[in-house]
Image (cartoon, rainbow, N blue to C red; front, side, top):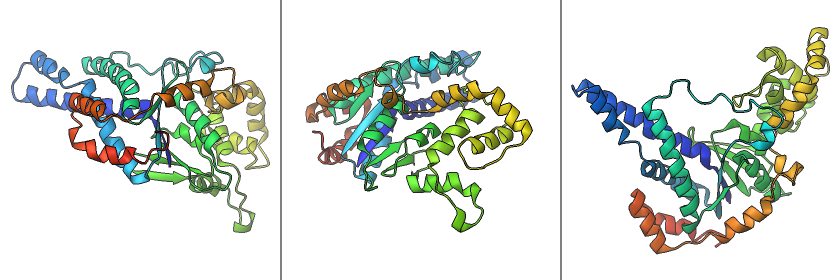
Length: 330
């Protein structure tokens, strides 16, 4: 079983956990009578890249055991996505708070250190880590799922992510596992969910490609990546249903909105889609990155011990060694 990990998303989550614990500690110190400045300084010391790395790897080990994985790909976001920003300047442009707290700034600083550490060191303990500048992790995930999809539909891979954008990377032989909810969604379940609201009679239930329905919903209704919606959510969804063939008619008013937003919808479809690296191979030579990254993968007991001492993972050595024994690219 192949496991692709939305590594940036997972590490962000661990950063939030670490930061929230620090904020909680600050409040406890203030309530105990400590000066606010000293409490703040003490809490900032709790936000560490080592803690984020420990939380990251500790959360991955049981998932590797649960799914009996044969290879793991850590996929990272790095820098602003140049090919999406080229067609929409405001893409992911409003994510920083206007007045960031000290804990927020320290968390970001430690996150950057943790990302570099994990990307450089994880290949030494059996992970294949892919960080391609200006390329988004979900686009790399699509590339992997597309190339490893099984015609027979036999399960070959799982995407580990809490990001809904990754639903566009589902293929019949792939599933998505949401670690926060501990929930696995198969392609068949996703297809039924996306088609279920179009039931007329069971015999008329058409199983359309759920990725197409979902893509048009994102293009018309917008999403958290600052892809702008074309109308109110309910009206935009009606237009999306019409465009992907789930409904066959549209009111005159909505038809007018559709024609007025034709260029915006076309742009949003490109922004939302994750097939960029397949559709336009000139963006980056992904295969070359794969070859280089895979050649770096090894498992060295001494290097794992060194890493374990740095981020306090000594208790997981034998569990991880057993997992790595199943890896097919070593």
